[in-house]
Length: 433
Image (cartoon, helix red, strand yellow):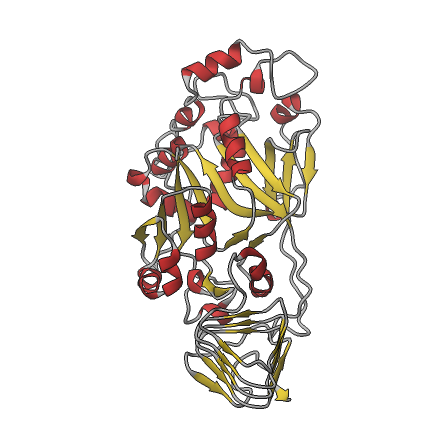
């Protein structure tokens, strides 16, 4: 592979504390497999043989004992960072700079998708891009989240994403929170791309192809902490700025005077803009093709730094970073898994009614006169007689006593081997069957 894969798996899951207070987010079960297993499986299916996993010591320990992680055949180069450190995604990428020998594919551990990964990588290759990223349409989760009934849902602030007529070249990116004076587009962008489409309702999937030079750039620019919040907007904006050896325009003045953390003038941006291979440059200079219409300007308008986006219109693409997304991911997990919905080691009574959209984990025991519909039952779980489970997520190692019904429970938060004879867990409601 000409790309090195990097999995970001150190996030604390601050937006779903009811689930992550004693289980790290990367190890939360989705379809009875750890959350981080799903992006690893995506990488493995397209041919990656090694992945750098940036995580914590707690997650590393759980990875070594989880049987599902043993299904991953790739070599996992695990790099641990401090759990209590205030380290962003760009900081984590900077931390492994010495391991990066080629361009990189960075994936978040909470991404659940059936994307054809080559569509993102092909954009990156075909245009010798600095950045190629994946975005999807925003999802409107309608299910009620346990503990939030009656609460007003706070809407997330929108992203404004500008693309060219092809819908692939990424020209502009800004969050609603940063637009205090309204939406303002720089003249340098409009001169080269007068017909730009501004899109809202898109979600960053946190899957990025990045030039190795970007990682080197981060090593010299320690003030950038986040890939999504700081690095991406910077790269998108710099596409239309002149390099430091060119005359400065009024639009570029702020960018050209940016300082690094140690106070020196930022000159690393020149490396990002000058990594084109000589043969590719020659081909572009002698070609009549360009990425725009209506003029005879050189390919890419002479731009050396180029950003692209692949927007998924169909298929599954979820960031499992909220309770609502976690519920939906478990509901759709059976569509992504190429294995039986009922684990071969599970003992299921013939008098059990089970819907086709449910998942039963390993070592489960399900007794007579039970009903399981649209639910995920965790490993080593015992469901006794006359139990009804609908629209629920039951974690591992739970015992549900006889005669209980769980409807629209969504998740059952318990400690291992906890016996449920009454509604004792947070977010749980139960009635006699």
